Image 1 (cartoon, rainbow, N blue to C red):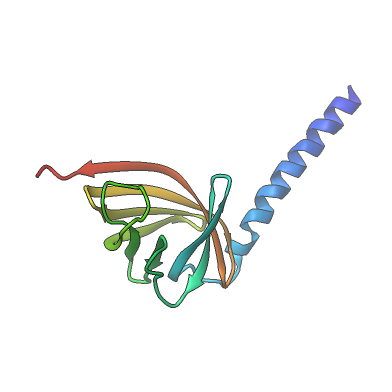
Image 2 (image 1 turned 60 degrees about the vertical axis):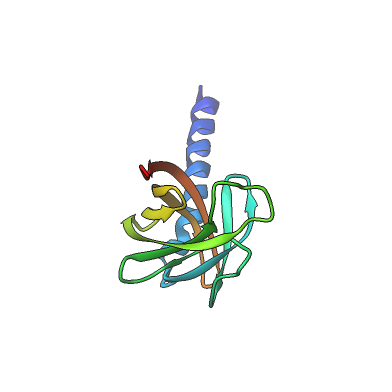
Length: 139
């Protein structure tokens, strides 16, 4: 019985430690404000690099301190390469220090989604998309 209790306590501590390690960078003075360009993917986590401007052929977004948001993404319904990119305007709101609500236009209407910040430092950002809701234009 003591071994089972010890195992459960260790498991809880390891789980909590992993979460706090992921969120340590968020407590720092590093700002998410700026332009971020896709740099790869690891499982369900999107990896981004800080940039001075958008890359013409990559996904990215800019988070502005006034609450505005610009997302560079697929400009049409077809996702088969070569993909044409365009900039779409929207807004963002911090729900917590690691959760953002995003509302942004896309080629067919408006999207609302939530992202969790997994990791953030001066040059790297890792996020996970939690949900997406689309409102289609009725043209």
